[in-house]
Length: 180
Image (cartoon, rainbow, N blue to C red; front, side):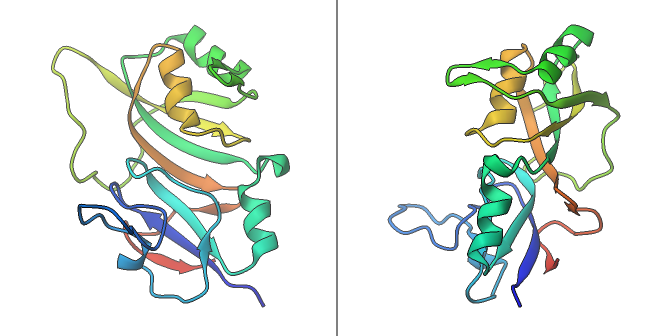
């Protein structure tokens, strides 16, 4: 029977168990998870937060991480400025990035989600508004959501992966994990 772990990754934590060769002490998964034989199914950048799935099943790991399977990944992105309908529509239709077009996504403006505070908080600028977008993608280009929002003129200030397929960070405290 394969093991599946859902982890709510805090900001600043690497999506790996070691940080060999780094001159500074950076937090890794081993600071939070003491379960032998599991590995992340995909990655979540150090400056992103939210759901990370770990498993000991290589086939399941590939199915979750590989874009060929088009598993939906939903993110909450706090962005600079207030995107208009055209910017949201562009995200939904796909955005041209340096490495090609993204697939169409589901995108909508939302009220600020009821989630944990970020530590450290984002830098707030008094003269620049911000808002939240809920974005669901079915691929996984490097830093894709950040690059997509920047391409439509609204850089991401905070990024939280909320769900992968049917798995969600719902009810999972920051830095905590549970069996999925």
